[in-house]
Length: 110
Image (tube, rainbow, N blue to C red):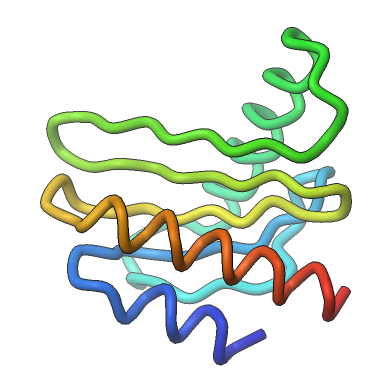
């Protein structure tokens, strides 16, 4: 999984990449040391679960939130949530493609 995270974090503007289980525990992560990975993992799981419940989504979905200072991208799968934090100048197309590819590879590993 480290190779997948290394590929994701190599994109200019990426601050961190996190693999989180549905309960909010960190499976793996790579990112800036000034980011609290435990807080990120708990928030990602809570947001993902709440969206899935409120919108009655069965389990596999993708969310992107773009803001002035940065962005968060999430891909929720059956057993995990792949999340990426970035600055606002990141190449969103490249990130989305890498996330899809990474999520597929992680699903095969888990």
